Length: 250
Image 1 (cartoon, helix red, strand yellow):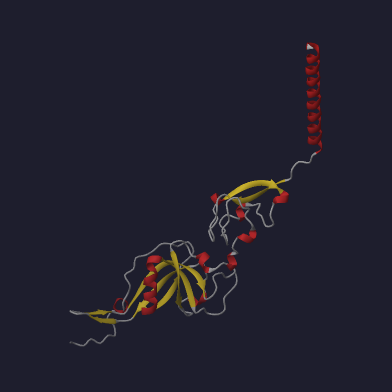
Image 2 (image 1 turned 30 degrees about the vertical axis):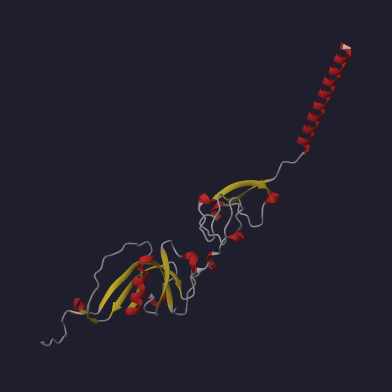
């Protein structure tokens, strides 16, 4: 009986070895004949990106997937993504696609407003927009001329002389008329009726008041000049003095 049991155990070991050898041979054969997976590098959202948000480097991650799973319009160059804006929310892990990004030339004005700013439009003419040389993306100073004004209060009368004063400085131009993007080299023939400016939130009231109470002109700033200069405004006497004036006694 003991001899029979040993024979059964030996047979089981031989079958086990044969099975292992067969499996090893099969795997080895399949490994040699199988084609390697064709992997492709694409970029996906490293975290959920809100609607209209600008994509930063931290928002993007590189992933490696089989090319048959690459969606049409997927990006394979990170530089083409960073700094762009998404039209709609992109969920974490989603492949970033070209049709999900906003076209800069067709973006709504709201995409172009810098953080902390508000878009405010003012009426202009050829003189006030520097003979129509101002373009979206330029920076300007806003200069207002205010007429003489008499204000009578309960116990006094205040006379404000006519004055010209720099109202705001280093203001970004967002749009000219209905255009917030004019291709480089293209000239705008028609004089716009309005200019839209990016104004600090706390300065919007100042600009609206100035546009309604005075006459405004825009002074085009040179590229790279962001320095503000303190000015006190100027009245006629500071320019011409009393020359030509006829002064009558009270």
